[in-house]
Image (cartoon, rainbow over all chains, first blue to last red; front, side, top):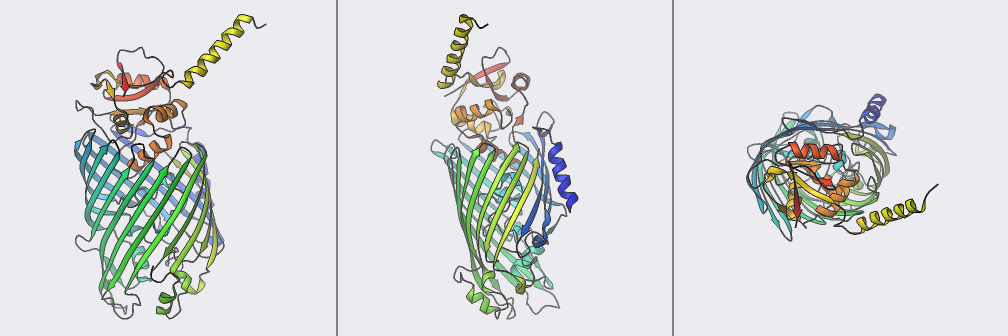
Length: 397
Length: 145
């Protein structure tokens, strides 16, 4: 564990002051990458590993290449290695791999299409959620960007049409896409609470996304509306009392950001109506409307030194915000506070140089809804009020 | 011993520096491009489209190659703020979103102003910026309207 931290510190130390990206073929081929290691300590509950005992199990490494073969044709792909407690074990995965063709591009508009594994432009942060330099804090607001079900938002295999319109008053951007979701075990844990016998699958085209963005010409104000519609198939195995059925999830978020020289204010509000169909009488939930929102401010004391604060609230069901109804459905085995999270975050970001970043963060949690059930399988062990301290070091080129 | 004349010279140059930085136009930073770019001037919005890497071709169809100095370079900061009207952290955010989502690329970062001039002069389709007068027939100054 400690070796990993030492390697991260050593890497940071060795990175020259301004490491340029690798470029080949007259700059048409670019290679970029990043690596990050965090250390966490929580008062209670498992959060990105054995955090009560100090966890080093939050590691992110990415390596990408892009080739701009002509002004209208781009090929790109990224490999991601991510270790996040019990949720991700560091097995390399294809984060995205796509071809982007933009036949129309001038000073007034751009129209194009992407084909392949595409990151979902959901909210302010989803597209680059695993790149520490692009996040507002070590942990994204968990009530919208759930790490316990990252793949419910992250990316899809399919096609996306996009259009940008550049006006005097600002820029409009529209993305529309369809395809198949990328499923993993965490999705099963999040929607069926246990590693049940059977499989959650995507059959045919089961995923649609749309997002619309407006920003003023110099990006002072940014407004967005993004949505995902998806249907997952559950094929029950022999050993489970559950029956085969489907799970429908719609997830939408409205986004706001204001950028000034020293300040950035961000706020988002999200709802995710979820419905379980035909799973059978042994599954207690029929439908719910997940809800999450936050308000976040960042202040740059110097161009390379930033402090931030955020308050967020999230609920498993907005019609049952104190968790009473859902807790009763489980016969009281799952406590009420497992159906909401109210989180206060403060943090510091120091960009030692353009390629090395150091972060410190503190979170005070009321409730355990943000936690992965996979990391905390026994609801009897959950503690309602808990704190997290975290630090991270990240390098990039 | 400091002569009265040198004191006057120092004072004059101090005043000159102060005046230069008070007036935006006197600060001689320029938008520059390879001579074959085929345009004489850009609007601020067009310059932003080039430097945020959203517009990848010149009107004549050539691929645009953008060169910048590091994020913490003083000239980069002045160019970003005064010519583009964007804070440097916003440029970085746009580039990072593109390179780490596979939807675009980032400019090429050069390590010095001299390297910037060399690369602009020798790379067809290149665009960048410079501080002070340019004496190179391969480089074209672009007016920002």
